[in-house]
Image (cartoon, rainbow, N blue to C red; front, side, top):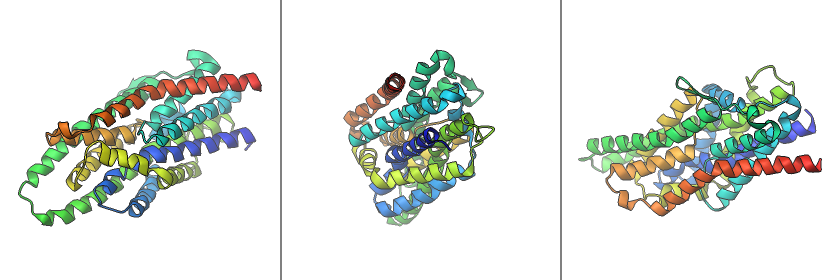
Length: 336
């Protein structure tokens, strides 16, 4: 493996780690916010199931991400490396301000920006939908746009259903609810690993294919393990900034709310992973919490200032990272 390829692979793992700062922390945000588990317990849970997700649920998301940019093999390492660098920089910037922006948006923007500089619009697989399966940029954007709506609607339905069942519940419900939170947090971490770790797996596979190390986008097992481990490391190092925003600043949630959020989010992300749709755990979980506020008929308790700041961050992420990547590749070409 030459130096350029090694650096690009390390950037892909760095992206997975910064993804952990953002998206992976949301897999355990409500569990910690409702005091269902300590941060250490939550990280241990996320570690195990983040690793299992990409190993057991297939590589449909990796195939989608790996096919977004098509450039000459000689330029692939530079283009993908610069796109990853832009996504990592954006993730670190938004993490520093505690804004749960989408790492998936950042990666798409970075790859598209660098690809446009290298080969114009012809270098981008714009795609669309192949039935329910997203293809290329437009298909990925559709998945990223629809999934938060599904997360919010699903959470609204789940919280209303749980409240109907529990309207005469006593304190004895506390134990089963806590147990349900743990189970659904594990399911959410598993789904998240299958979806978000696969984004790094997809770009590493594209790098290895362009450099002749593999014959197709079928990624080696080590890429899945390394990406999942990097994602979990990011959660342990600094995901608590985002946990505070999602679990406490949007809407003050209780244990029953956490269970509803985790159940709805896990279902949406699991389904997306099976279809090969790259989605944002941040967006799905945050939208599910707003859906819980609606389901409890307490939308006036939702902190809309925080929700608007998150929405603004989501809107500017793709153009922002595309501009960073385009400028970065152009400058790199000038000085080399």
